[in-house]
Image 1: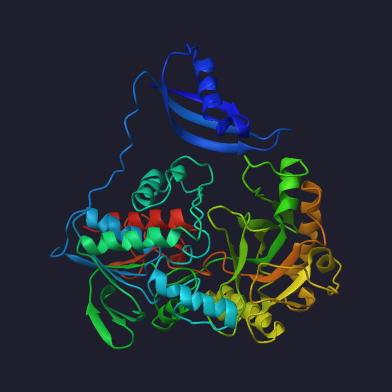
Image 2 (image 1 turned 120 degrees about the vertical axis):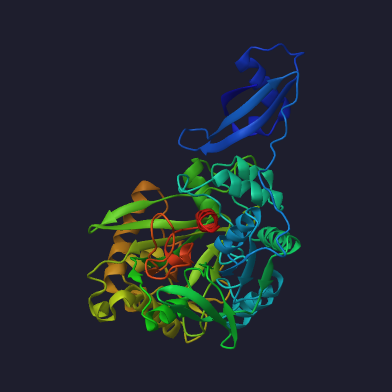
Length: 512
């Protein structure tokens, strides 16, 4: 067996005979030789005149390549030592899987509903503007990623075993292509089934998962955790607790603040969702009038420094939908997602800017909570501007840079609908200034991107946690409370499904 690298035109990759011919030609084989291969890495280079797939693969001649087996050792832990986990997002679920491997029983408390029951609450939010504060796009089994795309790309390759996380996802029903795609993606339509299978593994191994079970208090003595309260009534003793509540669990931050549990402020980024026709993004990125069937819907990644502050694209969704992601009735929050085929007519991306000290001047009085308070105010202002419903403030892109209310709004994937307003009247001045300059700069980098055929929908505000729950670098325990393991996005140590899952595994590793 040997590794080779190929450059292939898109149609060549999807034609088996052409692919085999290219392999044989590169390694000097005869036509009668039988070639077996396994793809290790696949990425798309669209910079050239003709886009090409860059393929790294493992090759064997006249003998099959042994199947790659996922590494796991899930045993029955029904009567083993218990460890409690708050939150059934990727950090909590993967922490539970690793605890099972270590012979420890995970007991998960999730404030929201199971993945199937969440659908009804999300539908009510989208169609009837009814926000369930405990079951929505952010809260419930699988966490925020379950119904907002399932992107698996991460830069956190040095923090843990990314391959093991991907293998566990494949073991539970994800497609094998996530093991080699440069930007792997499961899709919102497929991820719920994967999450259900992970739950079944945890339960079959003797773990416990409790839904509609919200952490309402935490107890400690002599700087050691000794118990928790669920739903204001149930009290449970515990000496070790993995806290994996997600970046939108503001009640946890306020609970810790009231109890003088150490917190740190954490800078955030805020902006809008920018939505273009997918055909426009395809034509820009692929330099063609129409994307051919062998190419995926095009994506983009943009960044610009404006007034010493970064403005960048976030969670770009080709063939995607803008989703309403508020966790309270009196706020507007947007995010984006794509189905597995990425076959919707629009492309959307968060375009956000880092919040500066100048932006925060009026919020310094809140101390460690200042980014959180800033975030809350922006979201509430958007709710008011949208008519105190889940209708979102919206404006065409060029109109926004000209500070002009759009005469009409474009068709948009945001199903609760848009309210035509001047976003400069709602969003903080500094944010609007930096976004306006960035959009014109992005238009120079991507000819055609800066257009009034693009819609801006406000507000994209939950890119990361506004609070960090500090922990020891070596033990991963809270700096103040022994036995508490702050984990994942909500604690400020992750930024996506894979990095959160890795952090959950890392915390589980520290428990013996």
